[in-house]
Length: 91
Image (cartoon, rainbow, N blue to C red):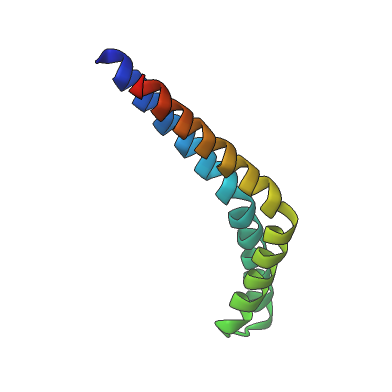
């Protein structure tokens, strides 16, 4: 019973790290673009909401094209690990 709890905690920890690794490039990229556009908007007093959305969308698309394969690799490895652990528990 204790081994099952430790296994679940380990799996939860790995899940959180995987989520962070997959989400971080998109979040950091859009955050940087939003900050830059926000500074430009503050300097020029242009307060248009769509002005921040379009560059963020473009950066997110570029990041997905560049890093999408490695993100899917991380998610695929995690999925294989989950199924392996399910098979080990059943034995």
